[in-house]
Image (cartoon, rainbow, N blue to C red; front, side, top):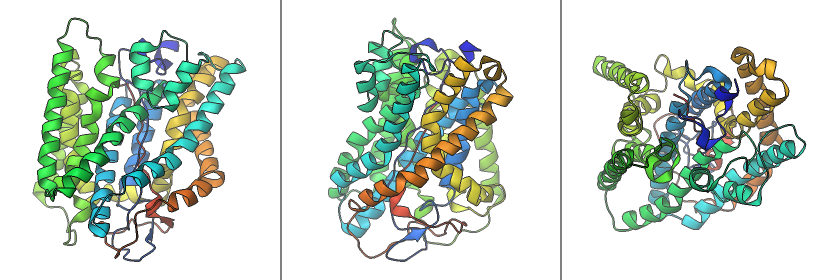
Length: 426
């Protein structure tokens, strides 16, 4: 059981493990068309539901059921969603204001991501200090986690036992933040040159090809080890870039015509996409898994996201927009941060429970949801007000998409920040 649950130790694994990190700061909601843009949980249909499914996949995988549920795929979905949502919001902001306010973008990310992260780290380090959680406490380890360097620290600088167990998942937050240090600046430049979104998409497609080529090169290098391609930003940013690509080339949230029922051809495409994804998860060749797998999954997610957003009321898809799914999606970032700490603490103090995944999973999920709900209730409102000061300049309201999320819950879409977990368990 110790081996099954040792996902927090970056170097100790040979198969994937999870993490979540996200970010997007809302834009006026689809069809809401009101200046204050108060819409249901997410400005784009189905995204909160996808977040909910992804974090469930991650928690299940970390609970010892990774042989049944590929937790690593949940992380890839989070990356894709993050790129898609943030690019959509950037395009909307640029249309409304004629520019991208990059400093405000960074400020909103800090006020959204940092409070839950710091609280989670305080809990993890407190448990470790009290002897209730394995791992170590070092200034270098803590600094790497706070400064979003956890992935490279774990790969190249961590001699072992320098951070609390369960916090190794923060590698995925580092991947996203490395991407978003550069991406807003790049988009500011390219949009300032009046390039069309599809032209920018073509450039991002070249980036995806370059990252694939780099992974292939590393895999065939003499000193290669699998964690190198799984955790490093330079080998995983294409999972985010594919989501950006969909937002730029064929964005379902920016379609002007109303969505119609799915055609037979679209259903066929969906089935083919599902088969491709299943193949990417079941084919176990090591070289494939560390090279083309991420590219194939990124391409396959494009039609799935298109349908989920464009046909939000279609059978199956409509369940992504149920109020409880959207609420779970809202909690996904905090759930992702705390869940593996909970699992590791249970494993240390109650090994009999940890040995039973079908008990460990629901217990971990319950504790994580309570934790996330407490953050949403007592911490998030204050920082939401701070983020409000860094919202894009108000312009004429512009719809992001053709439909509203079918939930009666109300929350400013400008407060939304994409969250995305990660898992190395497939």
